[in-house]
Length: 578
Ligand code: ARG
Image: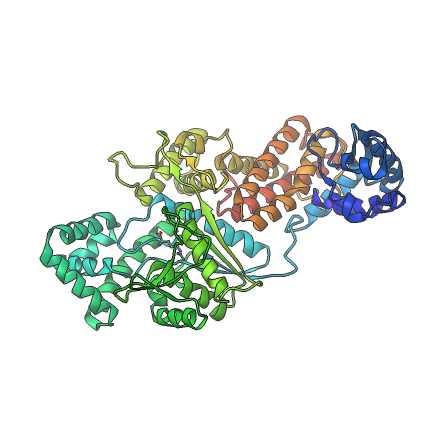
């Protein structure tokens, strides 16, 4: 609980002044307690034994005696086995939780040094099906965009779609073979994979088609108008389909966020000249390359980053360097985040390194590959559809909504149709998002319908249901007498709930700092469970004393708002009825 650390430090400082230990040295020993029964904070005294020439047990006792008078009213201090344990008093908890409940942001503060953050996320490829990896990128990137915006940063969303390169030669030729209208129909319903596969098949089997495709790439690169028009048809049809997925998923991405590879095309030659001016460009096997150092191939030789191929074509990496120039120089971004799967780690390491060598990224920039693992099926292998092909995202999302409809139906059969549809959508989409976000993003996770849609496990339906249940308490209460009531913590379950409400800020800040939405998820789950035990053990509406009733209603209200805001930061809706 950072708020407790802040509240106790002045008192601890006074008490510690007689020990002759630098503040820096004792401060680093103070942290959250690992055994919650012992206290909220603990100071481990073992490392002080050598300096003070006493046993840790004696040191902890001495420190306990010295700081106790300075923490009166704030915390109780005890010592045990060489640890000083600090536990917030109920009166301090009451005061702080009342403040937090009165704050629309529930104690989450805005950053004092707001930054401009470019988040590269979703980034599917034109005329190719979005796969589950793109789903992860979209969901994680969107949550981070919301979290960082809430923290007060300026967030620029960048949807770096793959809309340029040699495959477009064959895609355009295939489009011409089909006729524009028919191709549009096929792509418009999201049949991107079969379109791509058909083009690929012809390219591999038909040498005439392959030759036409190659010539088409040249036309595209040279800006031939007719070719650009056909290319635009492909891009528009695909982005229309991507938008459908985004709308279904309820993410922030809009057309204005599209910043595909093609947008950087005009900058590529200047990438070459800037790297060459920096003295970094070398010739290797006919290509222009940079050796970022530290990266070796399988044979143990230095691995180059290829900037311009022998045939004059540019690479994925060249475009990414152009992106960095654009984001730092035109958009003035301080932080560059890339929400992309782990297999691209080496690519980003090399690109960042080359940019640092060329001074395109400086000390003031943070560039980070926000990597993530794979989504696995129940067989432990990368998720595939029943037919064995890549899972189509719209199908997956629609299936989730239809499964959620059945679940909601069972829970609350009396709901009116329109409301039921809305709730099922919130539950179905929330379940998919939460299952993804609640895992440490760097790990793989197993996609499991029954687990993610359950109202009992560590799921979003569980959180949404907890929220709706609290809303129903207020429908029953049907008054606003509680609004400005002070909260009085007297009971163990009240105290546990108050502690959880007070640590919202810590988990939010840690999620934002390390770009780990799962920490916020974990917090919301433990808040819900603290609420459940509170509600089972502490009568609210039937409490006899109005002070108790109203104070407890405020605890309920703060919990509901924490859940609602927390879920919204993850891009998940919290319906008031379920
Ligand atoms: N389109 C790429 C893919 O599907 C992801 C692009 C990620 N962003 C970037 N700036 N490289 O793998």
